[in-house]
Length: 179
Image (tube, rainbow, N blue to C red; front, side, top):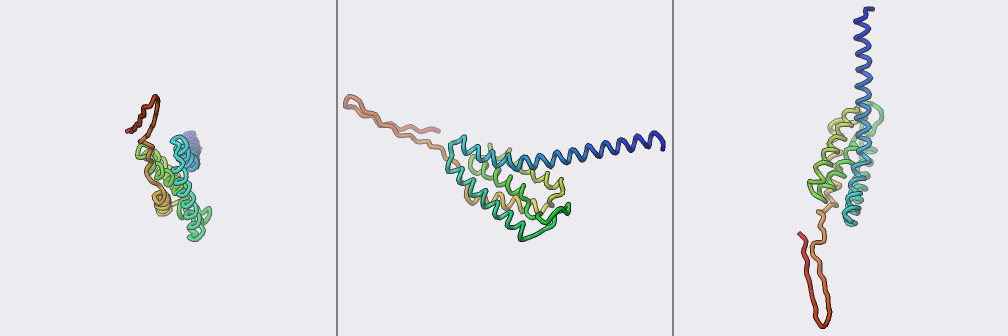
């Protein structure tokens, strides 16, 4: 075998290893986002002192999980990589889109836009890993966004403050409104 052929085979093997490592990194990043996006949604309720938002997120999260895993067991669709029959709908997609939808609905596009981008990337990682096809992803998006929309309302901070003070037979009633 000539040196050129050996060099080409070596380049091909090294390139294949690098592509495989990149695919594993992409798939793992989707697994990380599966945890990070819901944790971010819960953290946002904590930092905003938003107990109502926490319960809204929790109800949507539970409904999303019940629908996703219920459908997986009923539909029994084989994954594109033939690893098992839990393909429809994508759980990674439904969970990340439920979290992104909550953030957008509750706190606006400032929070929602980056979350939706990360949820979309998570869906890409599932397609790239050949764990799902487009229908699985679409089903996950619909279930995730829908379960969030059922329970989430826009966040309303307390804008009106009423105060009362008395001293030396004088009384003061105050209203303060924050914009």
